[in-house]
Amino acid sequence: MLTLYPELKPYAVHRLAVDPPHDLYIEESGNPDGLPVLVVHGGPGGGCEEYYRRFFDAERYRIIMMDQRGAGRSTPLAELEGNTTTRLVEDMERVRELLGVERWVLFGGSWGSTLSLVYAQAHPDRVLGLILRGIFLCRPKDIHWFYQDGANRVFPDYWEDFLGPIPESERGALVEAYYRRLTSSNELEQIQAAKAWSIWEGRCATLHPNPRVVEHFGHPHVAIALARIECHYFMNNAFLEPDQILRNARQLAGIPGIIAHGRYDMVCPLDNALALSEVWPEADLRIIRDAGHSASEPAIIDTLMRACDELADQLEGRV
Image 1 (cartoon, rainbow, N blue to C red):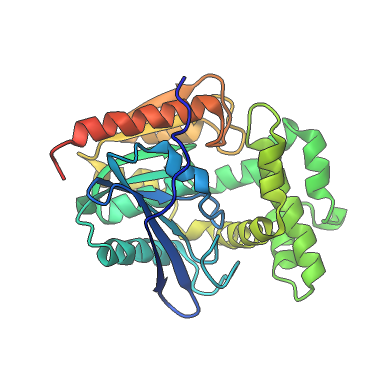
Image 2: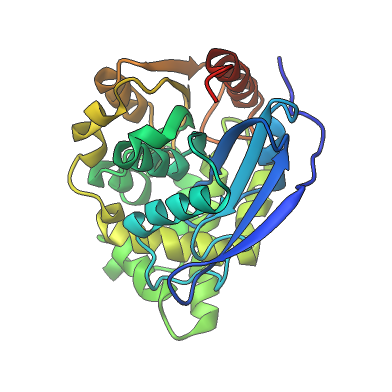
């Protein structure tokens, strides 16, 4: 089983001012002349982690990471103004132009798969290939599964903690109830709600309990951005039209794709990936028997790293 490449430092860091008040963090690592790949992080609001660089052979790939609006090292942290799916796609194009990239590979998981697919459907001529993990179609039923009724029956003990900040009278519409608290002027109420929201996700993200993942999700800096921005997007159906990704799948024609999806993914269940693969013939769906949702799980790491090597082999000479 493959394990992550050695630690890698960026060779360039950029800041890109987009619509006020947003300022984006961008970095490059690996080979400046290699196959360009954009890492599209999850959430929305999750930010990039340093270990994401380590999925790629640094001699073959030019690894580009950006923190989306309000996430990670982009500023202001957890900012909701002007934070929509359309704006994020526009930001990706601005980054591509800033770095002088003609076409690139997109590497995204969870919400990162959503955003990668929306970008690829809007700009298919700019995408060499897609490596996606934990497909999230952002349909209302997918949001309902994790934040109202579905995953709660698999993790009823963790669910009790998720319900904690919300009085019983408001539990019939939990996303709305959380949104009121996450946008409250009371900072203590905000952070308490943010940690409960984010830790729920972290606890459910792996097949086997992983305290490191839960600790990361519970960090106040991570939790406030993840919870506020996720809830903002989910209140607005991710700023997508009904079934937008599946209906626009024809725009992916000719784009090679590899999908890694854990059999026991409780955050984004496997039906998301199956539905996508049925309308995207070029996609190679790999169902991972011993995995849940997280990119840090050993079987998912192995699958993603093999996918990166395979796609680099396939695209050799085309860039």
